[in-house]
Length: 127
Image (cartoon, rainbow, N blue to C red; front, side, top):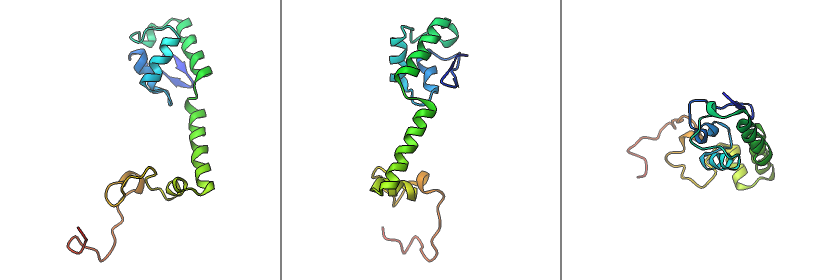
């Protein structure tokens, strides 16, 4: 099981799919990495030679921002939005959807569990 950027890449999946276990690497980027490293996308990580593993590791380290560095970058961007007080920053701060989604219904992932408001029943609600 090759270890790339602090992540154990699964041996039993195709190389293209296995690399997606790394935060910041999706399928298209994984196939791009394997193409640059001249490794077959169908080859499984357990079948990679030591030199192939090193090439893949080197390409990821040099050319892409992944894992902890990417997480830090994303958090810093969110923090910056909050500090400058823009609309997106306020939405992050309030824990509401950021990209213009509706909140009257849905948005439970961001808003959390429902908080029932007293004195409001289904029959009195506006439809």
